[in-house]
Structures are given as structure tokens and as C-alpha cells.
Image (cartoon, rainbow, N blue to C red):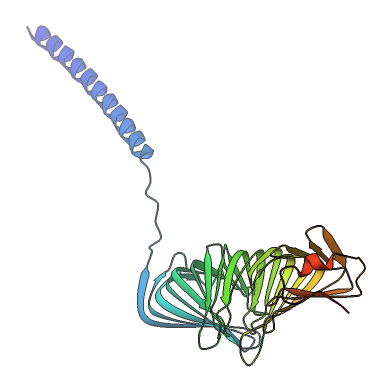
Length: 334
């Protein structure tokens, strides 16, 4: 009897040990699986905290070698510690030229990064030159190294009536202001000017150059002038302004000059127009063509008001009666 009880107890012991070992092995496998699953979880990266600081009533200045390059005033600003960007609202900036003249810039907003030497103006930008040109565009950028103001947007230019006596208007596809030389370059130009005696002159060209310290204008490439009782085309065209009156004094056309007035066509290498007297002088192999007649000379003078012509050293014969048929004064040979 005792032997039977001992045998049953021994069998139960072996079964218990076997079950315990199986349970322990299974537990280890579960722990490994859980550990592997934990290892596969992504580790959260530490992100840099972005701090933005808001400031009201901002003033900044950029000075190099004891010279001030620009000064900035803004109603408020927001700084970004991660990008070192400053966002300004309702701001005004003074940019100084080499001669210490001032270009004033106003805009609704601007983004400035001093480390990267970047400055962008946006929304309602107006650039005013020392002599009173007001350049309006959507956005501009300032180049710290070159000291230039540039825009790739459409630009409209007018002038301060207190500084420029004759209304002027320019429209162009872009703008570049060199603060070192105070040169203003524009392209794809359409412009108009009204003289003090109410005569309108329209001029277009591929390029034009204005100046922030005087009122000279140079048009270049495919120049077209309409007004003063004539149509004129040339490679280049210079407008010269009287200093005291701030009014258009002379117009000088250069290169492949062609003037058309009524049934006359005059070609020359150079043309000089006195705006006050409306006397047009053509030199550098000038040629006058009217109907079938051609007249060459050393110099041809065209009196715009009376539509008469005088020729110095004429080198071709023409039918004088034909040329005089509709004008008040005859052609004169000098």
C-alpha cells in the first residue's frame, strides 16, 4: 500500500517539475519579445526650442568704418532665435550714399537677417531718392555687400512736385539703385513728361538710366519719342534739365537717328533739339527725304514750329518748289 502511494507521489512531482520548466521557458520568450518590441520603438529626438521675442518701438543701425550704411525704425518687431530673422512691421529705413545723401524706404513689412546679410521689404514699398524721385513697387531687396536696392517687380516712378517742376512718369519691369554712385537703372521703359508750356512727350526704350543726385536721363536701345510735332527713333537719347528751372532744356539723340514729321524724313548720326525754340539740328551725315527728293548736307536744321528746313553745304539738288509747297518758310542753303 505504501509503495503505491509513493509511486503516485513521485509521478506528480515529475509532472509539476515539467510544467514549471515549460512555464519558465515561455516567460523568457515573452520577455524577449517584449524587449525586442521596446527596442523597435522610435526614440524621440530632442527638438530645439524656438523662442520668439516681440518688441515695440525698434531702432537698428548698420555702421562700418565709422560710416553709417543705414538706419531702421519700426513700430514693432518679432525675432526668431532659431533663424536669427527679424520681422518688422510699419517701418522706415534711411540708406546713405557715398556722398552721405539719403534714400528713404517705407514699407508695411520687412524681413532682416543680419548674419546672412539679407534684407527684404514687402507690401507697399516706396523708395524716395535725394532729388525727389518716388519709386513705388511691391517688393525690394537690399544687398549688403554691393550696397544696392533691387526689385524684379513692376516699378512706377513719379517726382516730388516741390523738387521737379515738370510732371514726369516712368513705368518699368524692374529697378536697381546703386547707392555707391546714386545711379538708378530700369528696363522695359514707358515714360511721359509734360513741359512747363503743357507740351507732352512720350518716350519708350528697352533701358533707361536716371540719377538720384541730378535730373539727367539716358534712354538706350530701341528708343522711340513721340511729341513736339515729330516722331523720333534712335539707339540712345539724353534728356538734359536746366538746373534753376528744373525743366527740360535739350534732347540729344544718338545712333541711327530717324525723324519723321508730316511727309519729311530726316536721318542722321546725331540730333540735338532745343526744347524752348523747337529747333532740331542734325549732324553726322544727315539726309533729308521728301517725296522723291533726297538732300544731303553737312548739317540740317529743322524748325519744328514752322516746319522749315535749312541745309549747310548741300550736296544734292532737289525740287525746291515741292519742298516749299506747304511750309511758311523756304529751305535755305548755308
